[in-house]
Image (cartoon, rainbow, N blue to C red; front, side, top):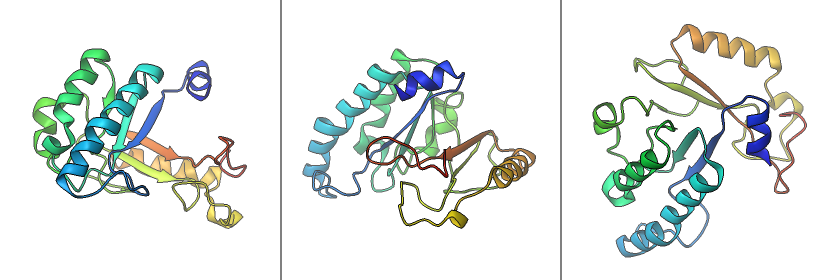
Length: 184
């Protein structure tokens, strides 16, 4: 429903996926557990997201522990671009992804850099930030923790002046899928 509503409103749909699981026991730095997790959880879930929701942008995170080879990134991305040649990706597909980004994926991948990056020497880069302080829903954030519409507009204008090619503003829905009223 959410992706359909975005498309009806004329918005691109970008979906987030963490390659590394931050909070479960399914993921471990041990090579055998990692490969089992990648083959049995990560790749099937990524394919399910692409097939069911056909995102315009697939934004991955949590890649820094392993190389593209370990994550099976190149194989997955080859499949991804065969299914959706116009999809755009960021550059978090393995700690060595940036070394081949500009040769193999130049038209489709851009620099994410660090979170809340406000200036870059990259030709294609993105600002990734939040409306509040948290990347997810936080019931304890104060009203003063949220950016106002005016602050977001000023930030956007600054970023465009600095050459930002993509302005991504994260929201953190509640567990029932509703939005924080301040973010809404």
